[in-house]
Image (cartoon, rainbow over the protein chains, first blue to last red):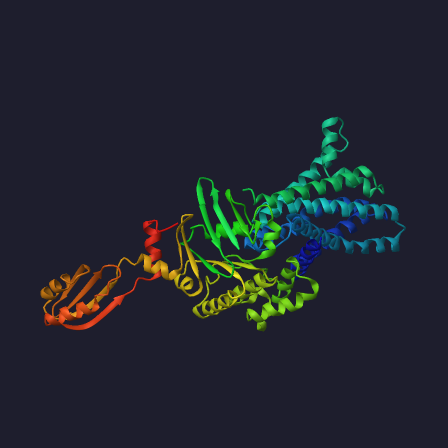
Length: 236
Length: 314
């Protein structure tokens, strides 16, 4: 586990030593702030629920940008070679990188706490719903990061990693969104697979075990696959 | 320390490493010599557990590279070709990261890192960002990284590639010093490097070992004979005949330049005919203006072996 910590530390430093962390946080702030103010003006309700629905879309685009460099950069520059010939397990490397990107994701959404202060000032928001929304956001972030990490592990090219990650996340969003409200086993499968429904319950103020299990098991599965991809170098 | 048996690595239909076997003994510097694409890097990557072999076994310090990969990795310091480093980190920060990754105990870490910085002479750049370093410094930072956990074995893939002559000299000197404490396997396609550094050399071509011996043995084995170049004033025709009549001469080539003649004389292996040449030319009223013996270098041997693919010994 100590190697995971070492990798985590290096990756977090790398994010903040390059402009990438600041750029992503700034872009996220601009869009989430825009949606927050627009939705607040439209609904006149002291809630984050409506603006967070749009936030998922922004996160689907920004999270792969966070994760794109994790492995793709190392594959390209060759630093993967000294890394994987050090006495560390593949899992420690993958998990350390996962944690660092997830941490950056959480740092990115942290400034939205300011909106809550603002809501408390102008109205009286439902804090339970806000807390559950944040739990949902964090869990969803884990899944998004795991998808981006997996894609990054499979390529040498950061742009390719970002684009495929974004497309994969948008597909997950769209199949959930499009099948909501439709009847039949096919649609309920799709809406279970998609990220939209699960997250929607969190924004309503519900923490449902099914959704927690969905996010955490899906994340674990993807991390497992990412470890296999990193390992695959050994059997190719 | 390193034992390789029938090691093979296949990419699609081509064997990058074709069933090679060799051993590296403790305290030895072994050079892996071969043209580009001969399979040097692949061999090293297998030994460092970066990729597995298709067949065959390799043990490093008694551990199997496939089954005990983590134990093997603790025993080796590996410098990959072109020395990939994280450009955004500072030198000392990078070495600290690597030391942690290689599980150097917390108490010794600072000491070990300072020791490596000292040994590799990178003290003056220890707080500099790696991305701004010159190639020579990067190479030495890479070397410091390979040493940080005090490994028994160093595996260096083309450690002097892309350096200027002064830097090459410094890095070689460093490797030579390291050879006193560590067992080293290094690859190169630069021949003087092997002559300078290595106790033993393996010449590898197209994935196969074509020769394995000490540099000086290889030279003496492969010398097909010595060549002597002459510049003589006198009657060319007469001198040529005189030279041809010397015992042990295989071939005489004559370039007639009028007054002054140039000759290239090829003698049989192990024969020194310089004195005979002198007396024969004098007897025929020639005046020697120049006589030079051309020694066969490792360079020629290398060229000969890798182009003709003649099996010397395996």
